[in-house]
Image (cartoon, rainbow, N blue to C red):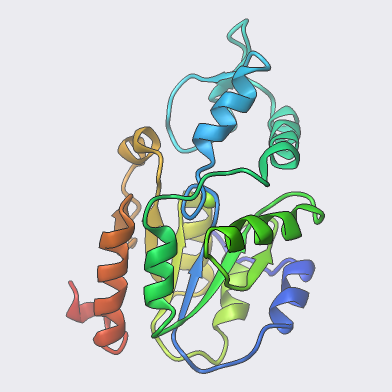
Length: 229
Ligand SMILES: [Mg+2]
């Protein structure tokens, strides 16, 4: 288990500006959870001669060029920055996400927590989400999300639910805020199928209807995860 993660100061400043309530809280990632990401990235990088060699859950090591050589870490970072600058305005929503979040917002606060590169991209993403009926506070973070989740959860009533596709972020939250109910949501079918189970994760899914029902039951059980297991 990794060490508890400290919070990115820029994320903390955004969190400090959110209204404080004692309602249950759902902290939800955006890329590959609320908006499609992998399918857009594949098209973007394909035009530059890059492709995935497998669909295991990492981006470092499985993106290769035409000569079959894996892209080094800094080149992957540059590729992602270029992708978000080009496509933040037009990523497609994941089926059922808007409706599920709207339903759940009747009983819990919802905060979208996204590792979106480029501060200029935040209003672009907010605008796109709003156009799809997804109007919740958006916090931009960098690095593993445990510290930001811990800060968001301070003073909250249970349950606090964290939804993300990334094993790194899920493990970071596990070690930084142990009371969170953890949901691994991966919209892309190939990455979903090849994602290894993570110990301690409460639900692994690619279905927003199932996710909504699961969280509604959790909210109804006053946050005791043991009642659902
Ligand atoms: Mg994601």
